[in-house]
Image 1: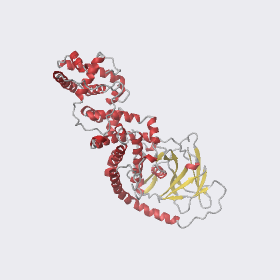
Image 2: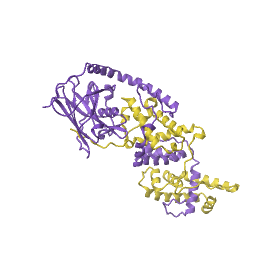
Image 3: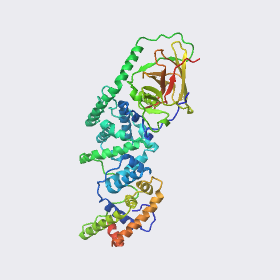
Image 4: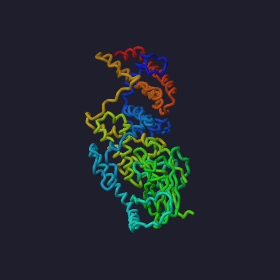
Length: 326
Length: 219
């Protein structure tokens, strides 16, 4: 064959014969060599394999005709993922194309995608049922705390005095997330410190991941792991200002952020500490006053969440500790 | 106060998608994220082994991949280590491997079509020896000797020769050797050496080179 990439002393006919010979000779090799790990394969493809990874992949390449064939496809597909077309194709998959079965709510997988194979659904359901017991164990103490919080909120609507002129006033809307302190135990995530915006498939998940990026529960206390560094807003970004005010409209704290989303699509998600109550507020204008009831804890974090494509993005969480501002 | 506008990294490039951080604390949310991510990835950029399957079987395989990663307390997912490479690439390899396992157990009619041979530089099969018994024996003997000679060569040459025989281009040969894609020139130079070495080894085994070429070139 003519590969077009060499000009050695073998002629075209010789090279063709040699290639045929090599194929016939090497394909007779056995197929007993185990596949290397996924990490080893990926490291080998990008040329960064360690010595042991390198040896494992070469042993499989030389010992397994099947792996040799598969390696060619894997290398092409992994390389192709970095192309913009791959991202466009990924983004173009609509939610309708994805079978149901993606919740761990009260009745998971009750309405499976008609094409979803029954055996897979059944097996995943069983696995999830097991994990739900674990989740229940973690969530029960938090549920008790939230019940207390709900009772507090149900005492009746707070009556606010006449507010001084200013931005619109928005009510806090409780969101029940069944949070537990264990969910905020530190987990080391490589590269997390560089992640400045979070993308998730629901607003709730985006907010939760954002909160967890700075809040930790250690030695019985909630802490903020770091202050969010200031970053220059992108061009075209919309600046938002949220005032937390008391029942008389007196400003307790100002929070500000800028993101690339119009007000109609932005929500502020609050988490109080240490009660782990959560609230959301529809951000309907660039400036907003949010009434922070005196019964609510003075500490917490807030993230701005907005839809981006088919997902939701959240800003890094902003910590707050309320005090009266002059 | 913080300015918070940043461009989110695309999900395909993330080495540690957010749902992974929820595995321990919130398995429900983690599953939801993983489920959607896997379906999106394997529908939009499926491994070649999935592309030629009937849609029902393809979806069966995707569901099995999800189950495979999630079973036993997310054993496979928890084994993932963030090495700075995209999680999607890791998942593609897992999916291909799982698909191969599953398809081995499927009836033949469900199996994918044979993948197309490579285009440019593609090579045909070994010349059919034809009905002449002595020719069949000659080709077999030649293959056996070639296998022995190739066995004596170093790993690099064996891989280069095999890749070249499959029609790999220099950049692909470089990846095949674990060098990454940018050492194509060296791969090409080394291939030339390896071919010469193999020819010498064959001749050292008493093979008449010109005769062998004629034998292998006959259609």
